[in-house]
Length: 137
Image 1: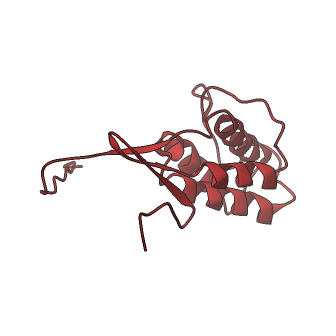
Image 2: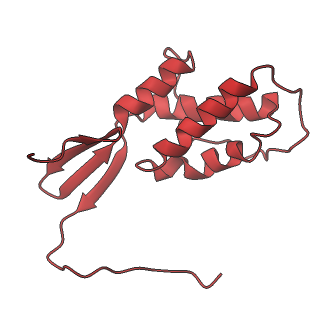
């Protein structure tokens, strides 16, 4: 079968350090589907100075589109842990999304627009043991 190159939307590139996993094409498809192909990128996936509230702002008209986009971003977090917190925040409001939540979702799209080449580097190791970490809380 040969070397793994592409699996479930994740592209695998081999380099001297190990493997680089990315979902660039998947990210570009999300941006296109959202109709934001020409949007200007931002430097962070969420606004650090604001907190989303459940009942703030007007309800959005297209619930299906919001839920679909938020769900697609959940899959993108496999190789993009940098957006995990922002995606988790917009997913909290899938049951009753408001325009403030949609704006937060659009900000994630704008961030991904500028960082489509980001991914997850997996490093080679001489050890064959698995090390796991866990928090007490």
